[in-house]
Length: 444
Ligand SMILES: Cc1ncc(COP(=O)(O)O)c(C=O)c1O
Image 1: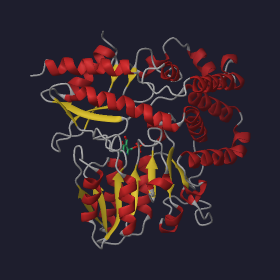
Image 2: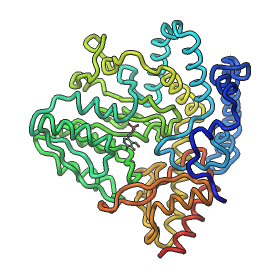
Image 3: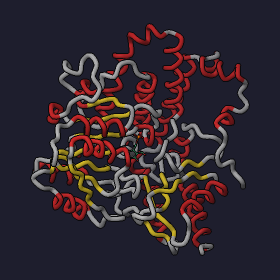
Image 4: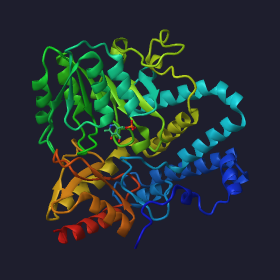
């Protein structure tokens, strides 16, 4: 089968006339606010009745997950295994986004007056979702912004040291590079294994690198290159004893893992809900622990930055795309309807199966740990003798499966990365495995 690998953007709207498209966005009768509300209610009703029937159903391909997967919006036949880059929205989130934009377009004035209350509702939901206080939640635009807020907002002096790992995303390194150039701080890179052998190996590496000048450890919670879930709880404990602050880049964390800020004991935590939580792009979250808020200057200042005595002082950004924030609230509702414990279990079950089966294929080298404590929904690997880009192209062409290349040759991390979210089935994973087996058998 030859799939249209990169359809033109316009093709996504094929079949809709210009008039229909405008009607779709601004609400003809089929998409009135009342009908969007009704559509959402029916999704939640279906999940509630599934929850009642399938309390114990954790099998990857049960009726439960099959039904849940139908609540996502996909082009026909697309098998999305790269939500690690950008994820799909469940239908209720898209409906709420449409609804919010529609209200905003048709009555900007009333929206303007109720947005602050809506925003506080979303902040409270976010706080409950990650076990934090609403006073510790900053609504940002994405992880990169959160990382910049922290790097920029801490008072560090020339010669102060910041520890990073060797596998940070540019959104996690460059805020510190800028500070290095501007203020003469020092960045030290601590190597982590591909994959590391244990929690102790990772934490010891950072502990050994700490000197009296070390002020911050800034690391990926969800390592985008290797799929490692960094043992934040253990690292934070060690760092706290040494008086070092910890900032986590958890771009993939929200929606993939059952997050609990109190348990992690972290100081700062930045995340991007459009990858695994199903929120739209353009809205993110930064957690700033209450006890460290007075160490952090706001980066953006408008009315309130010097008045709020909580995390709201870090987001005095002026007018924003509030529909995105409201849709973020809906994304949390959707995950809560299923439960974040159940979602993490499902994601890890699929990834565990994928890793077990990959290990049986000659030539496959896993970059991701098999330990479920040190891994989540991202699985990275390479096949000896097979170009990673060739794997990506072959899987898309043959099965319409989307994965991506990751890492780089020089660092020895080059390979592919697969994301296994809740709408992926065991059958989809088997198709992927068939493709990999075929390529491994025909390698040069
Ligand atoms: C680990 C990690 N950090 C940061 C980012 C940047 O995220 P954003 O573009 O949402 O700021 C990504 C994006 O993929 C990532 O994987």
